[in-house]
Length: 149
Image: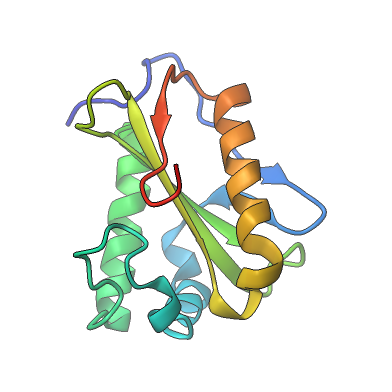
């Protein structure tokens, strides 16, 4: 599997704002992640594209497998999944993903979502933080934000 970033690039370990903490998504986050996803299923429809029905049909076991896969991809530097946690780490507020893309003119694509209960207050903030973070701390020239820009 090809690396998304240069071999010597060290992915950021975390980013904290007054509203949330962004850190790598780990398999140990499965209970909080699954709660965020399933409590927001209708809200999350189409976050990865109009034809995608995620997260409908997602079981707890499948979420556990997905988190393990995301963790392995992070280690391989082939894609990067981060959780968005409340500052006290009691609640998963959402996730963000930095992935390879086949879109012409782009070297990566990024997605983010916030759980439905916090979307009005935090969705635009997370998107703005994500764009600024990628521009400042990641080695990409052009990143696509499907469904957003």
